[in-house]
Length: 407
Length: 143
Image (cartoon, rainbow over the protein chains, first blue to last red):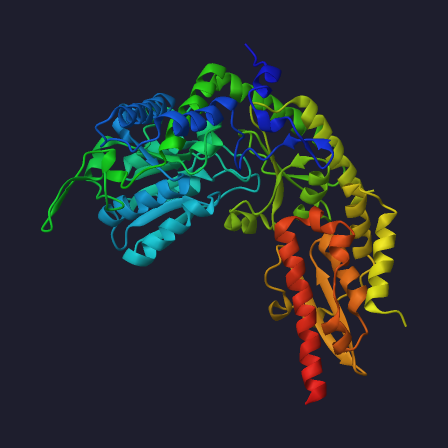
């Protein structure tokens, strides 16, 4: 069954506004998605009725907040098909999740001379934490190259892989180009040499079916705000046996079992990694976002977004002067492009004048842009509430802009 | 010769013809960028790039008979258009005039709203750098 996009749009109050005198067309979903009314209500409801600190208070409000907080953890477990909810750790976002692994798993299991593999497609948040770790402990960072169309060169990956490889940290779906990487193959190959695998799921968790047991990844990081949930909240999934062996990330409240001035013993997972008061309202409000995804259906969402991508790719292909960037056969709904003789910033500014929100620039993937010989791109990224009619308006605006310099 | 204030008023009335339409305003700005004099390639170096701009902006100035002559360029057309306006307002004037100028035409032509905070910061950086050149030449003249 296909989705009822008008009914879905009615759940998102922000979409119903004019920007610069035109109906808002929000095509910056890879940066962050908009929030359904249920998420907004949950935040308000929490502060109006249930606000209290979780896990410790011996009173009704604390109990209610704790129960709702843990219900979200269970929903995330369902989303990922993790074995147990304890394998789901709440963080501030994808970036913090990756840093957590670098600081804890990295400091314990990666030594001088060991190798970490990433790819040319990575977001800065999956590059810099590993550079910092390598600087600290003398490990070596190696990079899997890509083709001009934006796909990993798997033969090169296999050549880079060795028994020195301790971790492969790789993006599941590229934020800049949309490329979906063959992560199952990569994970199996990495495991064959004894390496662990972290998936940057920032773009995949919202679009693709991500089954951590089927994929057999060791870690997966993503952010709630790209899945119709609140900002300031992320998830790190990790296999229990690894999380238990890893030292804690931050020290403080919640993460301890017993503290004396001589020695502290740590709490069990997931609490060992959740020091301090977490983003309680955001965690609680993430559940209705996940419910929205479950109710709408991941498969249906994906089919709708793919339809928009194919439609956009089809009608924009013939625009004179338009250069698509990233043409891998398997992509999430990201249409990255440039216009001949124009800077992406200018294109973005002109689209904004028409009420169309896109992202322009290097998309926090400067090494990728350098590899492609580009300063940046214009990126339109679609979500469940976007429509073909919006793509039509967008395509018309892009054609007009392109005609300025491409007669 | 018309003053800096006169030129700014002139620009404001030119933009008034375009009305409130953002797209036409941006198109016009981009067109103006096309009329910018070629930038001397010897000065297309890192030290002439203005820090704080989202797009790349190169700016150099020289003193000719007590007046400041600016040359600038950018890798984006909108920025080039804005530069061309700044140069039209400030070029070939004494350092004193430049330093005393109250540059208010950007908000008056409605570009303040259009540019957004990042590009507005870049524009402010550009104006500061132009005034800094004027200050340097004034200091030299007074030495």
